[in-house]
Length: 299
Image 1 (cartoon, one colour):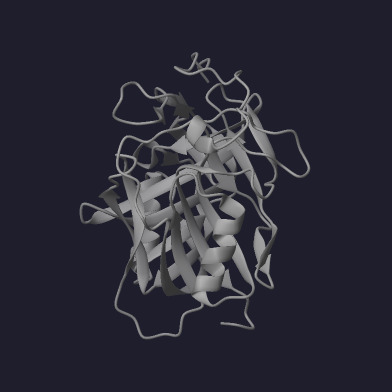
Image 2 (image 1 turned 90 degrees about the vertical axis):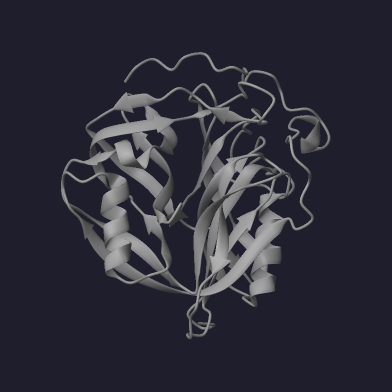
C-alpha cells in the first residue's frame, strides 16, 4: 500500500469545548427536518458473489435477482483482488465542509468488516460502502465500488428491503450528493425502517428518536456515516472533526434506549478509533445512513 499523504487538515488539533458547529459549518441552508425515516420490510438472505466481478456489479446483481427495492449488505470476509478507496480529508475549496483524500490502491485484501447501503443513482444501482481490513496494520476507508474486484467467490449477508430504498440526490445543506430514503410501493407490514441523519445531530439519541418514530421498542442497527469527533465509554476519544465511520456488531435499541453503539472510525491520517459511542459525543459530520430492524417479537 502506498504511504498515506498528509491531509489538508491535520488531526492533531484537539476538539474544542462546546458545540460541533464551532468546528464544522456546511455551506448551504440548514434543513428543518434533521432526519428522514421511511418504514419498510426487511428480509435477511445470503447471496454468493462471483469471482472477478466488481463489487458494485456483484452486489447489484444479487439484490436485483431477489427483486428487492434496495438492501443493506454486510460484506465481512469478502476478499478483493483489487481495491480502490479514499479516506476523509479537509475541503479543497469553500463548496464543502469536508472532502475525500486522493485514491489509494491495494490488493489481496480480506474485509474484516464492511457495510454497504445499496440504492439507486441516476437510475442505476449504487453502493455506499465503508470497510475495515488489515494489511500491514488495521486500516479503514470508503470503497470505490466500481474499482474493487472480487478475488474469489464469497457468500455475504443481505438485508433485502421492500417498501423503501436509498436514492442519491444533491443535498442543499452539505452540497454533497447523498443517499436519502424514499418510499416504494409495498404491501407487507413494516418490520424495519430506513433512516438518514443530518449534520450535527448526536447519533445515539437520534437513533432512539427514529426508533420511537418507527414504532419499535427494540431493534438492531446497521449502518455507516461520518462524525465530528467521537467520545467513547470504553476507549480514548477521536479528536479529529473529520472521519468515516462504520457501525460494528451489537448496535441495538432495547426498550427505546440505545444500549450499545460500537463503531469504528478512521481519521485523515489513517488512525483508527473504536469503541461504544458515548451519548452527547457523536455529532454527525455529513450524513449517517441506518437500517433499523425490529426485534422478531415486533415484526
